[in-house]
Each structure stands twice: as structure tokens, then as C-alpha cells.
Image 1 (cartoon, rainbow, N blue to C red):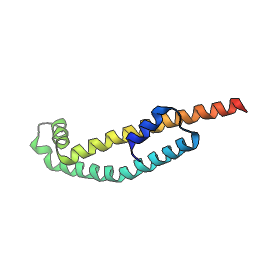
Image 2 (cartoon, rainbow, N blue to C red; image 1 turned 90 degrees about the vertical axis):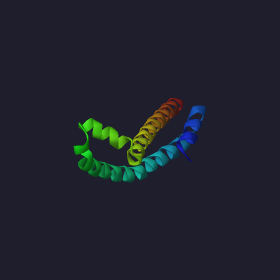
Image 3 (cartoon, helix red, strand yellow; image 1 turned 180 degrees about the vertical axis):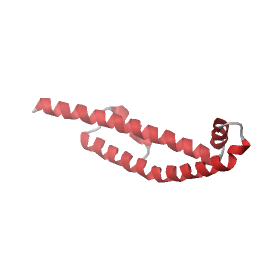
Image 4 (cartoon, rainbow, N blue to C red; image 1 turned 30 degrees about the horizontal axis):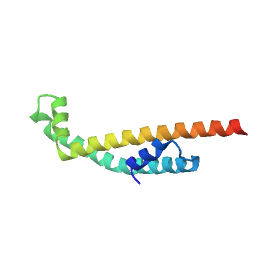
Length: 107
């Protein structure tokens, strides 16, 4: 399962609540597993910044130089990935709320 598959499934609008809960759990675990690598990249960024700040005119220039390295690109991709996960979890939560309200009105 990947984010694209989940997005396609949600686009149909016909996902039953148990499946929505399963997708939300998967996304939470996926996000958590990526956080370890993000922590490593934060430490590497700090080392890079400390070692290379003297080579650049400003903190922003040092940050931009980091962003052009392979590790900097990986860090930004992970940040984008985490944002996508957060948006999908929010969407799934909204679908679950609607399903819950519909179930209450039917009883």
C-alpha cells in the first residue's frame, strides 16, 4: 500500500468505515517510521550547518546550500511526504465523522 493507492481509494467516496480506520492506522505507522530518518537528517543538518556556515554570507545561504545536497533533498522530500500523510489522515477522519453522524441519524 502507498499514498497514491490510498488517495485513489478515497476519491471513490465509497470506503467503508472499518477500511477508513485501517487506512488511518497504516498512515500513522508510516509517518512514525519516517520520523526516525527525519531525526537523523536533522542531526546531519546541524553538523553541516556548523561546519559550513563560515563559507556562506548568511544562515539562509547555508540553508540553501544544504538544500542542494542529496541529504537536504531527502529531508525536504520527507517533509513533503509527512505533509501528505497529515492531509490524508485529516481527510479520513472527516470521512469517519460523517459516517458516524450518518449512523446516529439512522438509529
